[in-house]
Length: 164
Image (tube, rainbow, N blue to C red):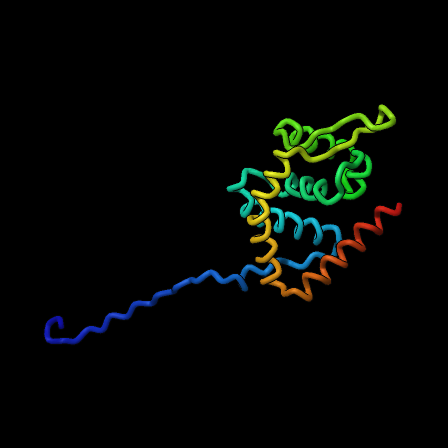
């Protein structure tokens, strides 16, 4: 009350709440661009989960593949993962330096046979629950049927280019 008059004070407040829905990505017309964007996002998710195990998803994938395939030639490993020789050699050297893999000469001296070491198996086992958490988060977000469809579709895409 001022000088016997009543004053009303009005205040306008705007509260902004960030929503996951508001953060919708722009559609991309290119299959490659969409796959690469999705791969980067998924890699970040797995790397966040694996961080406490001191391993990245690229390293984990190599260990898991070697665990399933057993001793395998470097060329065969590259084909299994659709990796070029230069990238694979660089990644394998890092794992070898950590003591997680070993390589030996094949029947032909030009062929290297790659396998897990006991330390590599231990690292894989230690990181597995963290990997599983990331895997479960994705499945929870998209559902089991979509997860299975995605796996099948991505295997088809990868095998399509492997035939060339």
